[in-house]
Image (cartoon, rainbow, N blue to C red):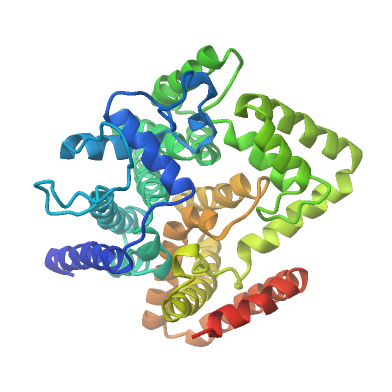
Length: 465
């Protein structure tokens, strides 16, 4: 396969991502609006705060937002572009400015699209690394890059000021450099530093990536590669540790990168929890009444109390959230931005549902085929795959929280497709697909039974033209 074809694929991913973002023209709201405010304030040198009008930065809510990686990413884009706000509405049009873009966040869409093209390229390189002797290794990598690049959910998220696109880039980069370190001792220190930096930036983007990072030094310890295992902690200690130290000193109590994690743990683990972001009155009142540092401490106490008082319900909730995570009736598309465009919403929901079903089924087949080979790097990849849901399920599950696993699933799905089209034993593949389909169908039926009323309520929304 020629390099030109791979180049054209990356260019196509870039322009498709940009094209949809400008077509959808989504303005930031909710979390995206908060990230944008923090990014602007950082770019203007005000500091890591969300509301600049507060007299005391201690009272600000920025520490409650997932971060700080994405907020600093936004700040870097805004600062490099030279667009600064002095006061007033952060979402006012910039028609009078000498820039070709009307709104500053459109530059973020372009940066997102560039990161998506680079992530696809890294998936291609992972395939070359994992399948050094496979005759179709380039086509496996190309297919993985294409599945990732044209996956509807990930094209859609490109147009939101949300951290997923950046997280996927750092996550895939970290896995690539980790595999480089693990697969060849000659590359150990050289690539360990790259892996360490990538993992630290992934954790700063979303702290749940910490579990995926720990797979890396664990494998190095198992290899008895002590020096590389120690080096792997260098940037996490400097960057993640440094930010945590800053938070702890500023707020006067031990804190990690954000206070959001403890509250998310409470949302997903209480007497009235259902595995989703449905908060009972107590949690809403606590969120309104308490500073997020106090809320963080209260959340941990409430979760510990819940586990002690009702351990079986706690276990049942984890099973319930696992069902949500792997359910096929959790497509994207039910965003407030599409309430007034039902045709667009229907297209997004249907394409997301079909693509997700194919991705889950094909990747399950690919993982089964690679599991049978029992090769070393394949097993390492399985640990990285397992770490993704294990980091999310204890909290609460939303559709976009699954996106961090999608690049790896694209890799396994690509392998399954190439094996199917090049194998003379296609019947075996079809049987495996059937087993995977049956398994996901059962999970989906159970999930649908739990949320039957919601499923019925969403049908008129999809058909309301």
